[in-house]
Length: 89
Image (cartoon, rainbow, N blue to C red):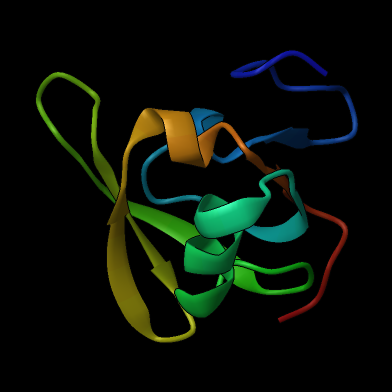
């Protein structure tokens, strides 16, 4: 799956998630400090994530994860794979 592309199964990178839509994190493809930072913010497999705000130019965007709204740059959001549909709350 290319960054920003949506597959037939509802899989996409977090940056492609439409505003107001939620999904489940499938994987975080980051290592080192970036991977640690994303994990500390609550971005890890199985967590529900929702895009709540989009800046006028599209970068950064704000996402709700674990009850907290966190802003991520597009380069970080592209590292997170999510899946929409096919899961229960």
